[in-house]
Length: 636
Ligand code: CUK
Ligand code: CUA
Image (cartoon, rainbow, N blue to C red; front, side, top):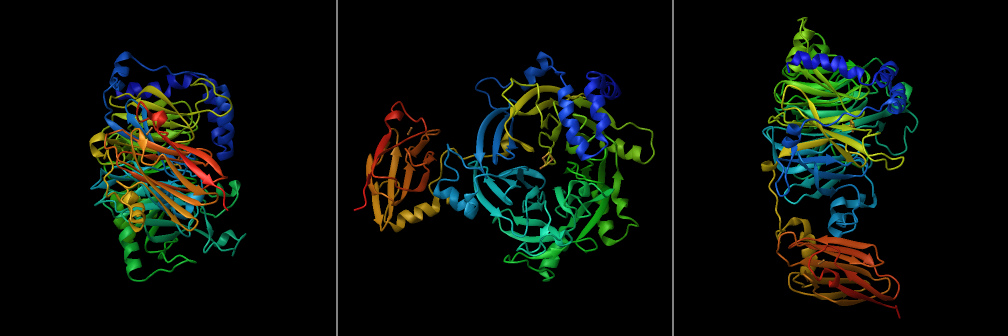
């Protein structure tokens, strides 16, 4: 089908399929965010059309027969469940969950000593709000070393090692509140992890200026991806929302709303213009080098002033309350979605040198085009063939449009840039295409991460699943091929080729992940690979045991009521997939111990009595028998 026919279909027939819902949403959309919320609720009641999956040919393309492997790894954020989920794409089989900011009953994340060390002081929080997962880069391509993700709820950034699919670093960002937008330096290498703090707060936030929003500020932070130390921060005007970096390593840009520093919803929508803030990374580094910064409160992180008028930033006016910002994979544009405006703003990255050098009359001169796409544009992704795909929340559609034609149209040429509008179900946030955060975007599959599923799945009571819809974008026309229910609430995803990730199936004994535990054992003169020993140290007891299916190295150990007990288990099975677990009944103690892993967990021994511990990862025909007793004596 030609592009024009598809476009006509998008504008005509698809709007007729459910005129009630469309008309209602359209009429209320213009009244702003309050209307948006109202439209969502009522619109859903009116909705009821079901788009059916397509032909058998389409199904065949996404079919991954039993025993076959997927072509891509998809990393989905888990929103306020705080975790990361790993899917095989295109099958959309969930392969793994990686606990990050949450606590995990199965793996013991948040309970084990190793995970507590990684989480630091913040392990006491059992929740997180993970929005933006991104895989590290070398020269604009994913290099599969790490995945980084933000925690909006408790102001953290975490790193996941992609050789073992485990979180291995976590940092709480100082001076900031609610890390939201997060992106990585794409070239020459990651490099920096850039993190937006969303909310404005007093600086320092120590009780001063409590109800004086004029003195609230937010910060843009750069974290070293190798050490996970916060290297520097930039003070900015307004609330930072979403951001992205360019493909040269020189610039990054963030949407910024609430330029008038309001603390109420009405106030946050009052001004007609907000900004895209552009950060000049070299200039920021130079300011830090030259000592042109201050520190705030207890933190010694250099804070460079990047407020309006500073040398390190530029504030490009865009229509109010912008949201997503995504760099086009050809490296040409930062594309900011309008949210309350039906447009997206294309900022030409090649003009940013001129902007910073003062060679432009007006900051708006960097705007290459501001195409109108539909109601509620939120996020944009790419197919590597010059087309962009933008979710429009209020219209419940993915809009496919051509970037080059949008620019020509903006410059007065009579060309259409909209190629197709596809209904999705319902109210999409992010969308994401295969490899679309790298220069290798291959335009095969696109996912629309929809906030509402309404009538798409078996009803499960008042709380509904979200609906991540898979769309075939390999041809001229987008085709919806699959609905995937997801639990609260993937915001974003990143999809990389399977050959871009290299995993270790069996732990290396010298892995830094449990090195501190090994150090502790050495201090106790214990070789964890061989010894099964109980060491008493005052009220502290350290229990070392091996596990080889179907046995623990100790079938009993004795402690006293109230002892602080640390159990260290080393799995000496070197067979792939042969994980054991360690769980003590009635003590809230459980952890995973995978092949050649050493894992440890610390707890307080309960009331006197016999407590069984058992292996809770099915490992052997005699798995049920893999158990032992903890004997708790009364304190005399
Ligand atoms: S934000 Cu959620 S839909 Cu946190 Cu990336 Cu736009
Ligand atoms: Cu060891 Cu189950």
